[in-house]
Structure formats: C-alpha cells, structure tokens
Length: 52
Image (cartoon, rainbow, N blue to C red; front, side):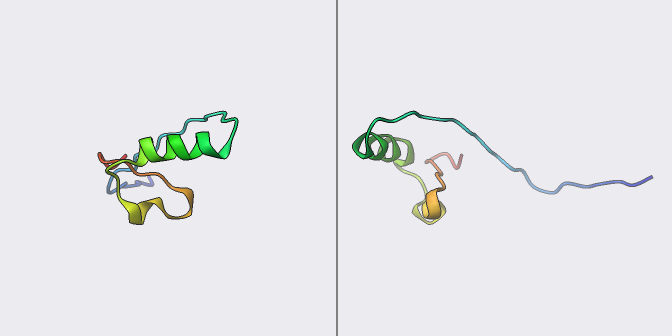
C-alpha cells in the first residue's frame, strides 16, 4: 500500500472580480492587500494580513 504524507498546509482562495478600469483594479488590490506581506505579493499574488 502506498501512503502519502502531506506536511504543512496550503491555503488557497480564488475569486474573480470583473473590473471596468485600472483604477477599480487598483482600488480592490489596495483594499485586499492592506496589512499583508509585500514579499508575497510579487507577480500578482495576494496575501492579506491574516496570511491568506
């Protein structure tokens, strides 16, 4: 029998926002990333103040 051990936890959330302009995108990005980890937000990844 093959046994797979998963060590750690992966937290993933996916949602879609339909924005009309770059200003609207910037608004939501600023609000959702507020207090988050700037290093984790490179290349379009978003990590909020709770680590999600």
